[in-house]
Length: 418
Image (cartoon, rainbow, N blue to C red; front, side, top):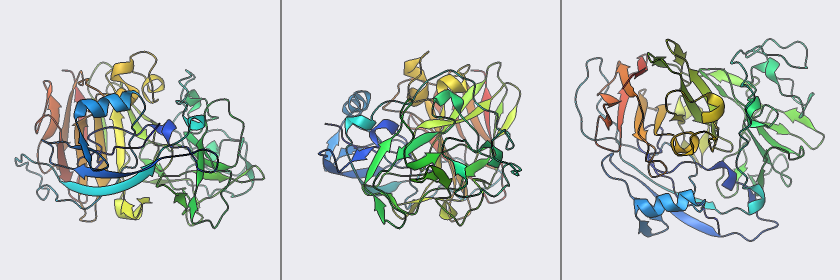
């Protein structure tokens, strides 16, 4: 039986261990029997990682084996109470320990009818231009207000800033969550079916990507009854797209900034953000081409999506050099299964906390992947402590590192040849 089990993390992005498996978040409580499990999630210093299934501790090997078989998945990316690193200053100082987090979450298993992996079709990803083509008139791109209830669910709203990801095979959407029993005003959503390529259009929530440095604004107040995250525009029973968060009139909003990616290598690096709230697959791409600097979306956690009352951060999977976004920003890579997609070697976490500091984490994707980056990664700028992966090792032990920048500060995540 499938069981949602594990949510391990450190520092800002808070996912030092296993990672979200999107196709196990469909819940069919009206049609299938499910098992409900309480999950104790322990966030520990970067030098120690503990894996819990209920009240029972499991080894890293057991956790990895369960993940590889599809028995365990991660739920949510939360920002619980933490002890921060030293206050950020422009001149770096040394530290040997990352933040510590403690939290409990609850989730349930899902039936097999929503467990297919995302498509890995090879069509080219859309440009991050905020004024891509679309069928509705009058739009002016990312700043245009979305005309709720007037555009068909079969039409992707590119003219309103959303970026189509055609290679996923979902009509440009990053994820589809069909909710046949949901009505506006419901306090929670009991039935969630993750859509996959080839499924017929149904009422539910249709999630989307935004240009570099921007994040989506739409998710319903009602979330999964067993703590699944739900996000995107609502496709209503008449087949039209509605704002699911009407207080935000546009589909995308700029993040708080401060973090960029610079690539000084001969090959590109595909950086893939999880679609959150939503199916939580690592499908939202930033294509860091040689010689370029790209914006990395950063959110003010207190003012963005809250999961079970807790603020959240952004999580990015960093693939090996030379992997395209079409190959790497999917769940399961066709070309190098063990070192990209869900098995990418390292993860970045980014979020601005209530204390005004942006927390940036860099950590291995264990126990899911044993791969190590075939490049050097160094977080530079107005950082509080050194944080890097260089010459095969992280700055603080084997579990990665966390650094901060102050409000108004800048950080560059720098890729160089190993």
